[in-house]
Structures are given as C-alpha cells and as structure tokens.
Image (cartoon, rainbow, N blue to C red):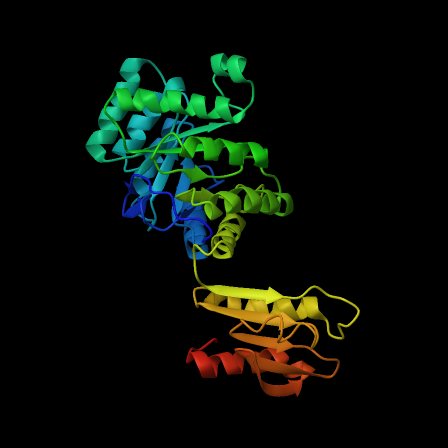
Length: 356
C-alpha cells in the first residue's frame, strides 16, 4: 500500500468487522425483488460464491421487510436493509434479523420515530450507514454550497449528528458521486472530519466497461491513500460482475493477495493469438484466485521473461513454439499448442496443488 491505512472506529455487521485494522470488505446489492425470497436467496448464494462479503437488499415495502426473517437464516454473509422514508420498515427489518441498516435519519420521519429506530438498533446491535450522494444533498446546504464536496460532506454530517445526539455511534458513512473527482474530494474531506469507517463507491457509474474504469480510479485512488473500509462497485449489470471488479481493485492496490494475471499489449512482434491465450489461462486459473501467485502471458521474447521476471510463472509465445518460465528462468520449451497445458503442469509441480 502506498499510504498507511487510516485508523477508524470498528463496527460489526454480524460476524464481519469493518474499520480499524480489519480487511477492506466487498459489498454488493441484489437487484431481485426482496419479497421474492427464492430469487433473492439464489442471487445471494451466487454473489457469495463470487466473493461478496456483505449484501444489501432493497426494502421498499413491508412484504420485503418480512421476507428478511427467512432470508437471514439461509445466508452466510451479513444483510443490510436499504430503507427510505418509512421508519416502520427500518424497525421491522431490525426485528426480522437484518445485520445493518442503510438510511438517512433526516428523511426517515419525526424525531420520535428516529429515536424508535435508534433504540431498536441499540438493542439488536445493528449499525447504520449514512449514505449521501451528489443527488441527495439537503436543499438548504445545496443553496449554500451547490453540488460540491463541502455540500455532500456537510449534508452527511447533519444526518450523523442526529444519531450522535441520540447517543448512537455504530455508524459508517458513504459520500458517493457519479463524478469521480467529486467523489474523491468528498471522501478526502470527510476522512479529515470523522473517524467512522467509510463505505467507498462511485454511484451511477454505468455499464461494466465505463463503471469498471470509474470505480477503479475513484475507489483505487482513495484506497491507495489509506482511505476506505468497505467498497461497493456499482454497475448496470449482474451484481456478480461488481464483486469481480471489486476483488481486482483490492488486489491492484495490494489490499488483497491472490491470483494476478499480467500480459503484454500486442504489437507487430506478436506471432501468437495472445488475446485468446490470455483468456484461456485466465479461465483455467480464475477459480483458484485465492492462490497467491503472479502468472504472466507474454507475446514475444522482448517482453518475457525480462519485463515479467517478477512473475512466479509465465508463458513466452512464439510462432510455432513457446517457453515456460518460473521466477525469471526458462524451464521448458514446448509446441505452441501445449503452452497452456504445460504451464498448468509446471504450476502443479511447484505449488503442489491440483488445478483440475
């Protein structure tokens, strides 16, 4: 990591710790209708298998809140209930077993209603995430600051104060924006004002392509500065893709170890179908992504193994034959058709693991 991790207060979502020295966790959100228990459970199980560590569910009605009673008993990761406007949905979600709430107390009801939510949250040990983004700045603050980092942060801190005034401090905060520079500025400013754990994300980031780029820049920049305790990559796509992108962001900034596949860009020296080769290697190794190793796929002798000498294992492709290397040293020459299979054999031999 480039910067020392910012020290924050630790909160608990079920058995998962957020903040302090605990790992940066990966979150996502189901796009199923929560009251459809079967579909929601199916999606949560798929997300859990992909590496999701916390899942958020929309709770727009009492049927969804009641569905939590069944859902929480059938999953292995913490559930966060996403609540807007109706304080009774928050209370019912807590009673039905949610591990966390996402709400803004300033728009959830009267002071008395907010106090009821807080009392239940205290009794059931349920933390609350305050979530403000560039589109939900309070009107009086918007008039004062416009759409700005100062406005987003002040709006979030107003919600935080409501909880603090009721002696509640099991809080995490997000200040997302669809603009990456604004998102970065907002989190930097907030991190100077509070020691609560921060939930990072670029809101409304778009499709898999554009959303991956925006999220990688925004989330990756802040993590590299030591800011951030849990992350959600928001994509207009299958939530499983959010998790895969999040895992790779964490590995890129060295917050997680695991499989790291590197490959050179193609050029006129390349005499092999490099893109297809990389995809084949990735497909055969991805299910072992928790194994801590770097595997390089290089298109010619100029880039490999020289530029990839730090890789644990690698391929150097040639027109009819290629080379397998390990820790910068050539260990085998094989026909091009055998490159991937030979790579797997060498990894098995050295790692003493079974890939298939």
